[in-house]
Amino acid sequence: MDQELMSNEENYCFDIAGYLHVPGVLNRGEVEQLNQTIDKAGQLSDMLGWDGELKEPFRELLVHPHLVWYLNQIVGIGFRLDREPKILCDETCDTTAPLIGGNEPRMPGIAYYHQNGRRYCEGVRVIWALEDVNEGDGGFVLLPCSHKSNVASPEDITTGEDDMGLTHQPVLKAGDLLIVALSALQGMRPWQGAGQQRLLSYEYVGRGVIRSAGTGSMTEEEPHPEWHDSLSEEQRASLYKPGYKSTTPAPTIVTDGKTVKMDETREVFHPSIYKLDPDSEIDYKEFYFWDLNGYLVLRGVMDEEWLAAANETIDKFEDRIVVGEELARGSKSLAGTGRPLLSGLLELPEPYCEPFRQMIAHPVVEHRLNWMGASGGRCGGATAFCSVLGGSGHSLHSNNEPLYPPMGYVFQNGRSYDQAVTVAWQLRDVEPGLGGFACVPGSHKAFYPMPPGIRTCDDDMGLVVQPVMKAGDVLFFGDGATTHGALAWKNPISRRGILIKYTSRNFHRSGGDMVHPESRWGDLIAGMSDAQLAVMRGPDRDVGTNNVPRLQVENGQVAVSYERGSALYSKEAPTGPLTK
Ligand SMILES: [Fe+2]
Image (cartoon, rainbow, N blue to C red):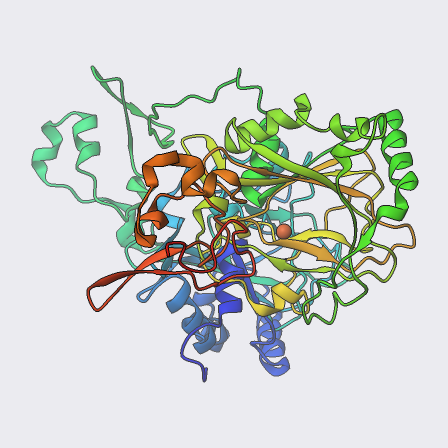
């Protein structure tokens, strides 16, 4: 490995999606040797102890230099093998079992940690593909982003009954390496492929993680001093030594504040002060999807009549469509013509404004806005996005890194705190692969900067999603936290999305009259200096950096800087000193 550290692309991908695909780590000869050895052994597990030379290639893989290099950075130095490797396939796995993993409730011993640029993914599954896995082959599947999920996985998703389109079956070539966070929801599905199924899986954990007992004879019996014999079962359970079969998983003492009682199932007992609220009127699966991905689609909110009225209005005012700038910003895949917009839909004359005014404070939508970011959100106007065949996409923008509070996403104690949500009403079908809104699921929790290939979509590592929608569907996305934009429009039928941006009660994103000190304070500010006036301003445009007058200290003196740092400069901001 000639680089010292993983690239930002690799960090970003593992960070937001919970897995990393490293192609071509093993060459054809190495893959062949492993396959022949498995065929010779005629077994699918216990390979580290196979006879004679048979075990050697599997022992070498255990500390393959490429793998060590990645795991030092992903798990942390001192990572260990948690359990013996095995071939994942229909013979060794229950392919009808629900997926396991997910980050709620949190399992600290396999969880994903990140703070101040330091990461510890305490548990990973490492898969070496020894045969190709094509699209639709089945076998190993995972749910991207679920290593950071704050909401417990719905049963429909773990069983596959209704996975909401979230399950991902990685496509691999023989010789590829796949590293998956153990806290990501994952499991095995029946093999449908024409070829042989051969995924070699090792599970590694952090240096201090207690997860499974080993297989040595020492693990059979936990030693204990004689005096333990006179203790109660619960007392002995409090004094257990980890690492033995009888103490893995750890014993569970159930408590109620008055009594102690052993629970033989050993399920984790971890009381909470909260209970799921069945009266919250929040659809649980919607909430899960939103927290996981940073966007949500509600199906069929508009009926035929409403859709027809809205579409007829756009047809009628087609001559008011203004073709704006090309927004591909240097991307090859997003390049095309400028973006046609029809704005001011709420201000159209009666009755044409009606189908759009109906979108404001609509009970179905307003309820979602309330649970996504609390009451008090306010919207600007409604604008139709009318891209035509050959129209450019919009280079992807926004991300949770760097953190930006006025537009960020936080989950705490069962609540979503998204400060900036855009609602997009679909007046026409959005077909698969034909362009339109696109986003990076999970980017609202990113800890690494957005890579250039994501911004342009020219090298998106399979992380960019273009949701398929029907006319009448409504899309929500965190427009400040979730990385989003649009793919080039490839449909001969032009796009018809009505975008309405909501800003939270907590921050200003546009400024306005009350920014000016005299509007806000009246005579109180008379005779103030520029520095004083700078701090007497009202809430101003809080988008990007350096877009309001601000104080600087130079040589012990306070001065006001009016320097413009961003294209989104506050309209109300003065260009220089106000006082004479
Ligand atoms: Fe945007």
